[in-house]
Image (cartoon, rainbow, N blue to C red; front, side):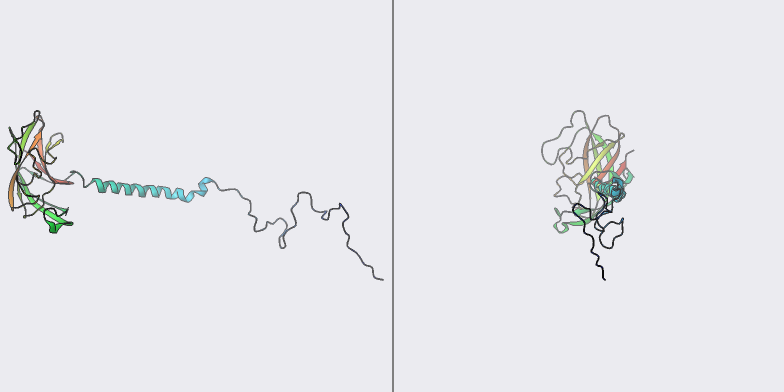
Length: 244
């Protein structure tokens, strides 16, 4: 005789999973061992601190500071260095000739065919004399100019030699005292000349003859001791002429 065994069916109110404690984990997914975590559930771990999260940026920060500082320094140099007169390219004695050569961008105001081209300016310059004078000569245009009270005037005599049509724009002739004070760099000069390196009445800013002489007048303090003449063309370099 065959005996049939019917699986027991939990009665009302009876727990179908007596081995599961209250608050225990639900049934595992197929293929997972007890104590394992499903792949879609991130494993709990200690969160990384601020220093670890930003380690790469902390390493790159000093490099960025160095690069930024270098770039800023270059921009300062590029804009500041060409502006002003602060580099002594030559030093000669009074009456000694000096050969000057410098490259500049020609705008073509006096020689149109040189517009927007770089030109090499070459000339020989000699300071032949520096003397204190009691009065100023009559200017090419306008009324006579008196020496202002509290000032004295010096006449600086120069001789130039250069190819005709040499551009002498931004010519500056200054006297330097023993304490470093510079007199006469402003243009036009005390007589109203717009170019100190060309004769009175010159048309434009280029030379017309192979050789010529000029006199430039400079006002200084009465008690200043003049030791040097400086000749420049816009900077940054200048010719220094030592006085006896």
